[in-house]
Image (cartoon, helix red, strand yellow):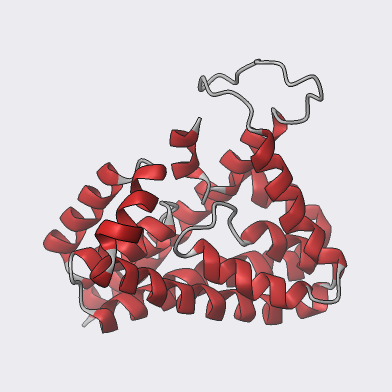
Length: 232
């Protein structure tokens, strides 16, 4: 069960997992991936979404984005989308709040990795079974430097594992923050732009195909930089 949480930064996986928690009889039916329902996760998801209907919704978005960068399992996208549906004209404001909260939380995650990995960071990484992800992040950084950081920040891997890993491996903090700023801004503002342009109609599409959207944006971003380098 818990090992599937490593994919919770992908909204499509979150929605698929939560669908199995709706059975009030707590049956043991499993999805094709082979994991059982987790009622507590459904309750946490519902709690997160409920803030969209409260005056403190923007503060909740900031705090959830902050916490998700180091330990919280629910991605802030679910609340971001809900807030945008209720106030489409404020979509970019919500994206900015989400980005700032995520960046500050990322700095905390970096600090946890650099100064408290054994006591705090390692249990978090193990809870999400992110050891293999850490190895991949290290490989990307050793191979591509800053671009490896950017790849990890944009692709739909658990951001909390990326932030903690960056501290553990003593990546350049400036490069880490720059990569995080680009990656998280791209993610959240892309969601806001789609909500602003298409309104609630795009909501189900984003939730269903979020993973593919993230990879598509990453390909376009790298392709754009590669083209600029070639033209020079």
